[in-house]
Length: 127
Image (cartoon, rainbow, N blue to C red):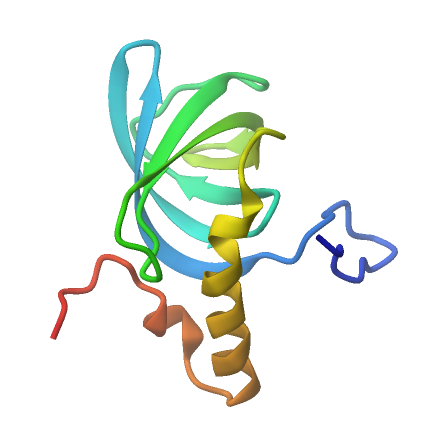
């Protein structure tokens, strides 16, 4: 996968795309709920008021993208946190190809200047 252009001040290897996606967080036989605020090939920004996790904690994230029918389970690691917001890095074993259709559609909408954040709200009811 080619990496996105990195600004000289950015530590991020991949571009992140804004979204609003419900996430089940599985850690040590407990389930929490959160919301992905952005997602990229390398990880996601996760908001969860109930989650208490330390840096480098391994967590399973379960979520559904609007471009696929099944839920995805992804092993991820807490890389940083501030209050109820967590920077999650996907494990190297994660099959990034699952995200390609989602990002391709997102890029088309971005090019056309549509409000893509609203289009990729996976919690919306189907019309």
